[in-house]
Image (cartoon, rainbow, N blue to C red; front, side, top):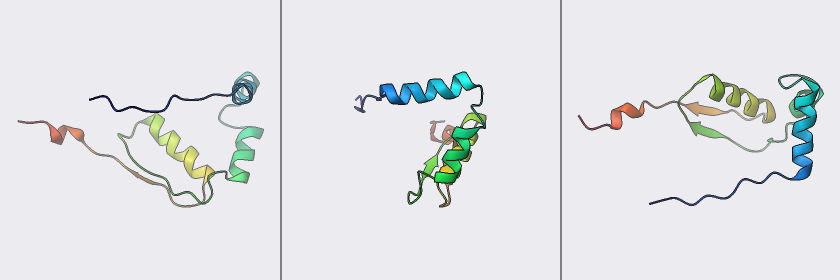
Length: 85
């Protein structure tokens, strides 16, 4: 069974913002990041996830935490335990 999901959306404004940051060379720091941390656009949301932690997901967790003052709950599960012997 295929689980349907919504198609991602990217407006022209969103694309222009992403392009501006990438072209500016300050993806991990700079004015956009500072604004994100100061405005905390995710304030009021509690975010939790169960993921296999890699460098990428760890950085995602740090990004989400910077955008929301509430604690971020992040867990990892070894899905190998679900395999039949």
